Length: 179
Image (cartoon, rainbow, N blue to C red; front, side, top):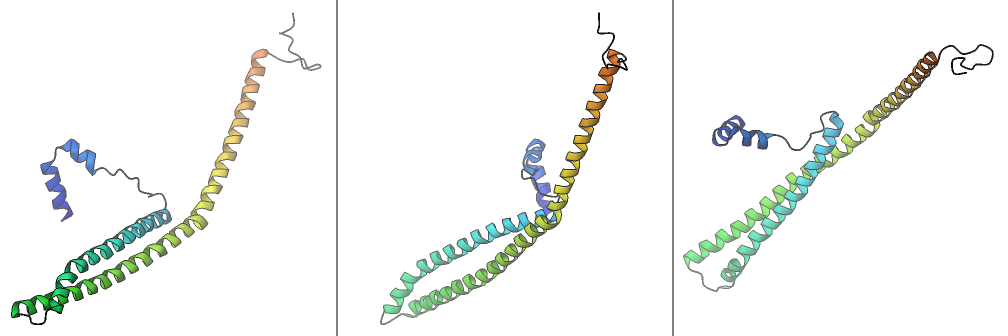
């Protein structure tokens, strides 16, 4: 299915637009699986919260749309056959809305639980397993850089000493510099 959509997009759009818009603009953290778990779970948490709000709002809108007509039909003393069927349909719609809200709330609750678990697991493992190794690697790189700098300074000093000539073994002064 996805390949058909891609082919359709490539057929309909010029290559420059496809290359421009099919390119990922968001860098994915592929250097560390725990970072990926944590950030993907954070995205899942945000999605679940937004979807929960949407489910609640749409269910409320449906109930608000159904209730006035249903209340009018319930207050009527004598209902025609058509009104009785309409009343039953509206009652059934309310039941469906309630059951859908309950189902989607459970699914989103599971999604929230999975997201929170992934966030805790990913960030904890990232902090306790990967980060100490990266910190140690950075310290080692810093020490290597310092040693290389000292070596360059020593080589530079030796090169400057060789340019001046041999120093006097007794006093350490350069005999070439004296007039």
